[in-house]
Image (cartoon, rainbow, N blue to C red):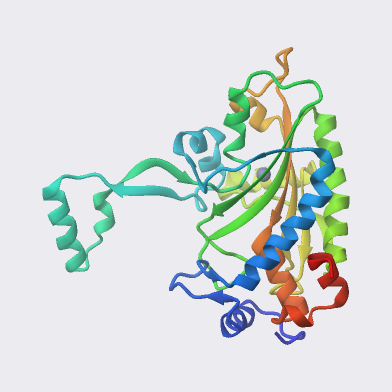
Length: 307
Ligand code: ZN
């Protein structure tokens, strides 16, 4: 990992060569070494320590969510190109014979599968909103959650910072517009401090989600104009185009409206989340401090391992 070279392919090859990531045959789908996982665990430890005093409720969701719930969030309107739905074989014995025949003759056998009720989770916080909605009115002081999940986005790439299956750790605030703004501001400060303590260069910029198509361009512009989304960027595979490693999102009352998340007086709640891209942070650490964690700067080792 030469400090001067900043390109995705070189970094990916170097991660393979150093046994930090393992190839699967599909771009964006990799095995992780024990050390890579330990770096992620330690980083999560720092985030949890910083967020601990807020006393968030922790929930663990699997990396798949109800397809019906994904449909209701409007995800297919905004990001059809990223979504993944789990399909399965549901035929009888005759269909099975046909399926095997198709596989043997190299035909596209996937048409023998049908969509299940499960969709891959695209962002860690998506399964949370229907869960909160089911619990009834939100108390005046708001609700705070902490969760972590593998997420799927269909964007095959040689850029190791653009995996198809990756983890996000998130904090989610549900409450008034003012509560959500304060939450977003506080995590922008805390997030920057966490990253700076790891000796990583970073900047926070206003951003937009990768909305699909022409209407999507308008949505992206409006998101930027209203400064609803910010990203903490670290150069990982390019200096010109640094990678978004943390994101700070204000959804306003989008999820409150779609799911009917309300205060006792009937007004829709606002929501916001801060997401830590765990693989991206780990990649940034390996990229800037080298493949061998034993030689990382003392300051960084201290922040991660406390020694
Ligand atoms: Zn989120």
